[in-house]
View 1 (cartoon, rainbow, N blue to C red):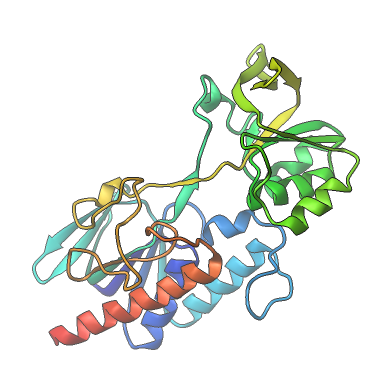
View 2: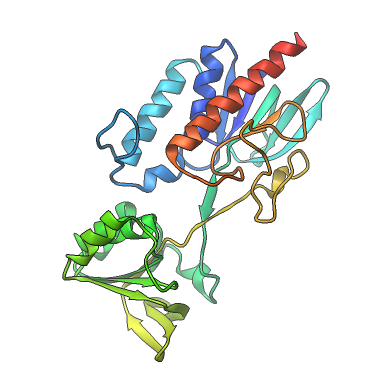
Length: 303
């Protein structure tokens, strides 16, 4: 039995484990995919205090090593439920694990949002991608589209423009919404085309293979030939499995304030899965610290 089970191994979960261990509480992190969360998709991060520049993967590796160095345990399992067990809880996993604990911190993060068009599930990983640093090399010398106009989309486009013959940015709003610095970089690149006010309407395929995107704009509809599409149109939470212990807002995020508490004493939430205005690595790690300290206070009060 552990003092605290943490669901999710991104910056919030790793921060929670670090604070738990340093305060004398045992912790177990359950992560279903890969440690580090969304930041591992960023080839270059320049807004983490103490690092002028670091890759998301390197940051995640350092953070995981730090937490484990303090004694945190980790398991690659997908948590699917939280049950009451006496004075504590049991976290149930898809793999059949039952992990008993005194408190739970949910730090499940978010997943990529898709346009929701017919046939896209079959194209994910075979024409539709989310990570330029992971998949960009497959499109060297080719044409790709990037759906989105925020910081994530613009960062993807910058990286892709170093490899691809042409990058077409598709933004459904009248203007890009990413940082001006990123917009300025892209504006200077001859192989980048920026289309605003366009809607994705479908995918062009041939024998099941991706061949381009169908768009609609003020002039009508047309197909943009492309070898791949990188989607960066936002993120969505996957918190439904834990709605029995923590309230959700209208968008599916945990309806918890800055104290990271839920309606269930002993269950806390942290990071991007929580309803909040700003989602950055720094706010995620801050949530992890707050949630861990709150869980520690809860456990100490029962002694």
